[in-house]
Amino acid sequence: MAEFNLTLPESSTFILMGIPGLEVAHIWISIPFSMLYIISLLGNSMVLFVVSKEQTLHKPMYLLLCMLALTDIAVSTSVMPMALCIFWFNLKGITVGGCFTQMFFLHSVSNMESAVLVTMAFDRYVAICKPLRYATILTNARIAKLGLVGLIRAVLLILPLPLLLSRQPFCANHIIPHTYCEHIAVVKMSCGDTTVNRTYSLVMAFVVTGLDLTLVALSYSLIIRAILRISSKKAYKKALNTCTAHFCVAITSFTLFFFSTLTHRFGQHITLHVHIILANLYVLLPPILNPIIYGVKTKELYDKLVKYTCRR
Image 1 (cartoon, rainbow, N blue to C red):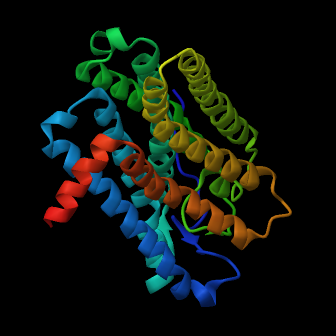
Image 2: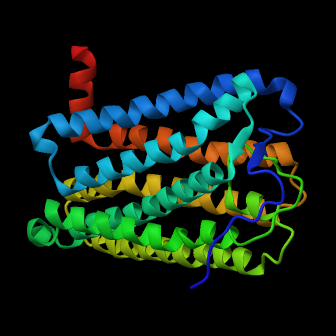
Image 3: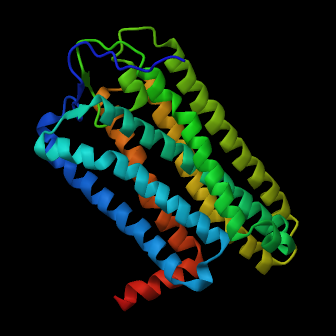
């Protein structure tokens, strides 16, 4: 069995540069970044708190929403503390093990979020197209099992990324022009043949995420067809409102994912600091927008959020 050994020539530390070209503005850049991070933590934590406290919200839809909130917190937390340490204290060093751990955690949680969005699309499909069988098809226990399957899928698909990288020889220059250990940014530091690394990550990103997006699109095509057949205007509006929130969240997440991935791999003409800022916004914007979209679009959750907010 092959051994996975780190083959760094001299140092076991990488240097994260933050946002190259804007080092003098790091302290100012940290202000909106830290504010966005705090807002995302507060918004998602509030969703988790309200759903856990309210017995009436202990339903599959809100269990999925809690999973989404947890993945949003995990994605932003895997990146922002390190980024803020670079901006505030100029702490740019990260061990190879820490770099690979951050990479694995970030990409596996992102993959898990994609699986949650697919499950949420299936939940909305059953709620609209098979409402009489909803309670028997989707139970809390079944949703928990689907969440576990999504987690196992994410771990198995992402684990090869750090394992493949651990076999690569790295150049003497250990500087990563980024705020976090993004896979392709680390691959570019290798002096060896990275064809397998690049091919695997590209196939995984587009085939797996593309499959998830296809399943979401298929669910919504069936949902739209079912909604158009509803004759009652009131029922039509209610059915439409039940899936608008998830549709907005799915579109936002998948659009930002593909945009970030494509610009990192093929956007050679995009200025480096612009790409790094966009990559950070990719891990910040969905965690902020998701609780806002669901809080506004889902009346039951909105009422409970207002109740607890006003009480405090």
